[in-house]
Image 1 (cartoon, rainbow, N blue to C red):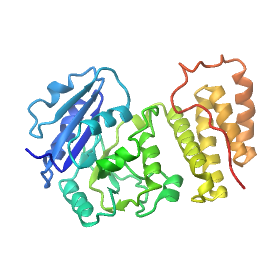
Image 2 (cartoon, rainbow, N blue to C red):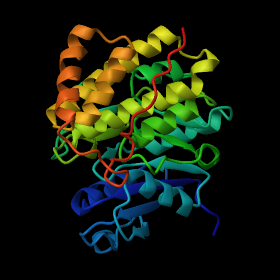
Image 3 (tube, rainbow, N blue to C red):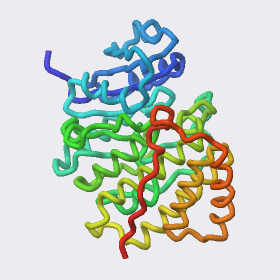
Length: 318
């Protein structure tokens, strides 16, 4: 039997009921040349039993311990047989024509290897709710994407070859692994846009993006800082624009770390914010307080430092 055109990769961790609903939305697709790869990221629930007998006939990959969304998606990509990869999170849903429209767009335009689009918010029971949706941009999106994270994983359909060329998701990142990858991809590849919400984001308190917000903000700040330092000499983003964005995200992350009593991390982030030119009247008082409080905290060992939160040197060229 020839391989399917599309592989749908769904990572999950202890979301058996929601996963069944996500699979149901795949089964409802009008496009049918697909396979489903479910990756169990070290769940304590019996995910294999939960998906047994589902009409999408998922290929099941099990990780022995929880390794995070980047590792789970990478194992799914490695197990996939399709030329195209489509991502769906286990707590989200697709509308029935999602794959049909995205595959048709990719087949019409051979020069574009990745398409994405907006998501519409739903509540925990699946009912539509009013919510803010970030504007989406097509084409060469590096600068716009640096300024705002608007490429949502469950909307993306792309070639497997594109993901392989860019080294897949960075498994050292506990969150923002998708933001990191899309930034890297944007340097090479224009993003196609289907400006219709064909994926549905379920709003619920257990979302990974809302867990440990101070850590997530620190990782985001360092992803952006690392990315900018890798392209600073290429003139893609002007230094003033970069400094304003980095100063703001470092300030927000530093403030969150301070309120979470992670004073050494707060000190590093708030110091960076000031070096990027963030207004001192906002950053300086917290920075001074964080520096003072950090003296009473032990220096964290590399084993206890959360991945993606280690300080990045400040380098903004005039």
